[in-house]
Length: 96
Image 1 (spheres, rainbow, N blue to C red):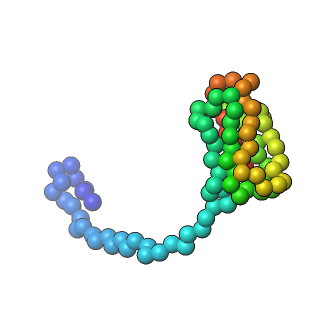
Image 2: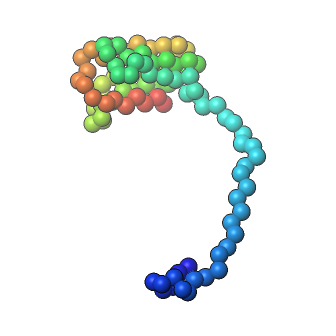
Image 3: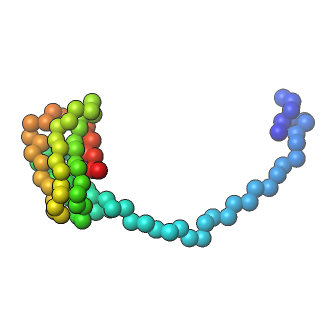
């Protein structure tokens, strides 16, 4: 700590010890196989769902307006969504 502008009055330093973790339990996310292609979207958006079942999928524009929703009760690898009428912009995909 410096107590005056000329730095003539300072406190003693201190030591800090850091020991990194040696292991972490790795847990795979249930959405590890989820992806959205292409980016940017053209006319069709493909959601790759690999192993996701029983999920509610919603897509909203950046203002929170719902543009697409579906309930995926059965196991599917891909879901294709017609995006040809969507305005240019950013969209949020939510999987619950």
